[in-house]
Length: 199
Ligand code: FE
Image (cartoon, rainbow, N blue to C red; front, side, top):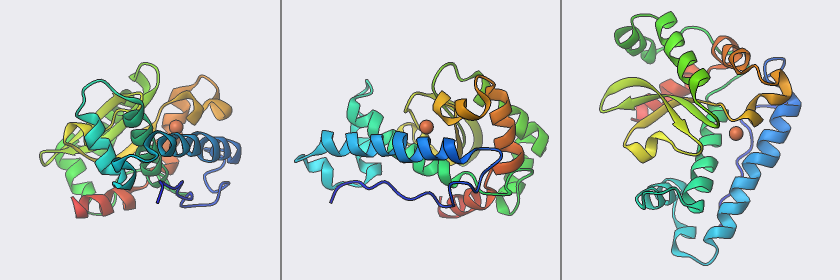
């Protein structure tokens, strides 16, 4: 059983006008698929081919320098997590259980949004910004390339992809516009609450 490309959790035009159908088409059907295909090629006939994606990531992360297996496995996981970090008509202040943690940790939604925005905008080059649980503490972090919280003993709660392929068709080089759309219109607090409950 090889790794599969999971379907998007919504229609390709469901995030428009904030993220266009064209962007989701290229990002999911080509970029995400390519990571899945490459991972399957790299693991063909190897014991890790039968492991879970999390096991592949943890096993390959322990070698220190990011290997092709780590990079592709992490990007498979990161993209699946990113699709769920968004929903149509999302965004705005946190709801549910996590809203209490956001207020306790950051003081307000605005303070959280400022930190998250900064992490997403200042990640130099390709990477990700995250809301994570680190030893029971909420934190905003950023990672480069394929790197992810799981490789650092943290639990991811939300993420935004800040590789250029995530936003270039829609806003070209204006990454801050994309980050604003994510925070104000797309962010999926229901998903963060689900993950938090299982953490
Ligand atoms: Fe991406």
